[in-house]
Image (cartoon, rainbow, N blue to C red; front, top):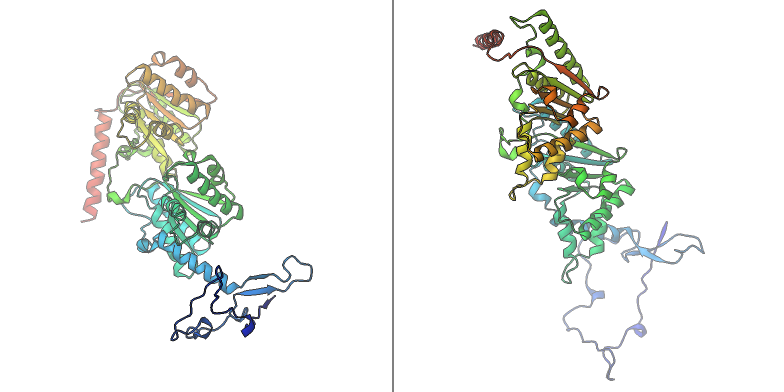
Length: 489
C-alpha cells in the first residue's frame, strides 16, 4: 500500500518577494497583469486527479518504521505510465512499423504452388511458428534464410497482430536501432540515451530485424550484447531475423542463440519472393535439374544385360534407398559414364528433400571449383570463406563427376580441404566418379577404403544413355503423359 502526499498551500510569509534591490540577489520579473499565475490556471477539461496520489505524482509506500523506503516519496504509477507511453510513442516513430502495416498474416502466402515441397514446408512451418508466437509470446523466435524469403514479413506480422490486440511491441531494424541510440548523444536530442536504451532492453516484446547487417564496431557489438543478454537472462519474448549464419555472429550472442531451451530457430528455404514466381537464382546446387531422377524411375531390369548385372543394379539401388532413408557417412558410386550413378545420387537427394531436409547440395565438381574461384572477384557479394563453408558444413552434400575437374594444385587442395573435413566430421556425403580406383588421389583413396565411415558401390552395367531400355522408358513416359492429358479433356 501507499499513502498520498498532501500538498500544503504556502502562506504569504512563505512567498518570495517580487524583487530584490540588493546587488547579486535573485531577480524575478513581474508577470503581466492579464496573465493568471500557475496556481490560478484552470485544470485541463475532464482531467481528474489520480486517486492514488491526488495529482501530486508521488506517494509514500506503506512500509514499517526502519525500512529503507520509510518516508521516501516515490513516483506514482500514473506518472510511470505516462513516462512509458511517452517513451513508447517516441520510439515507435523511429521503428517505422507504420510502413510495414501491410505485412500481416492474412497477406502472407505460406505454401505457394510454384515452390517445391521442401520449400513450401519450410514456409508453412515458419508461418505456424509465427502465428503461435503472436498468440502467446514466449522465449525467443529466430527466422533465418536468404534475402526476400519472408522473414521480415512474418516478424512484422507478429508485431502488427500484437498491436492490434492492444499489446506492446517494438519492431526495429538493427542498424536503425543503433543509429537511434547514437542520436541520443546529440545535445539537441529530445530523447535521453538511458531512457531509450532501457525501453528497448526491457520492453515486453522486442523484434529485431536484419541482425548481422549492422556495422561491426566494438560499440555496436557491445550495445547489442547488452540488450540481448538482458533479455536472455530475463527470458523476455524476442524475435530475431537474420540472413547470416550463426557462426558469423558475435560468439557471445551465438552461444545464447543456440540455447534450445529458450530459442526456437526456423530456417526458411524459400527463394527471393521479390524476384517473382520463378526467380532463377542460379544457386550452386543443380538438383532442380534432376527432379525426375528418383528411385522409382531407375531402370534395374535392362535389356541385353546378364543376370549378374541386373542383380548388381538392384543391390546398388537398394543400398542407395537405405542410405537415403538415414544418411550417415559416405556413399560412393563408381562405374562407367552413363551407368546410372548420377541418377541414384539425385534419387538420394530427392528422397531427402521429400523427407523434409531442405539443405541438400547437389554439385558437379567442376562447377564447385568455378563457384569458389568466382568468390575472388572483387564484385562478388559472397566472400570466399562463406561459400566454402556453405558446402563444407552442408547436412547432405552430393559431389557428382569427381575426377573430371582440372587437376591443378589449387583444385586438389580445395577438394582435400572439403572432403577431409566432411570425413572427420562424418557428414553425409555422396560421391560419384567414373575414374578407376587406381587413378583416384591417394589421400582420397585411403578415406574411401575406411569401411567404418564409407560404403563403396560399383555399377557394372554399361551406359544406359541411348540404349533400347532408355528408349522404351521414354516412350512409356510419353504414353503416360498422353493418357493423363486425354483424361483431362
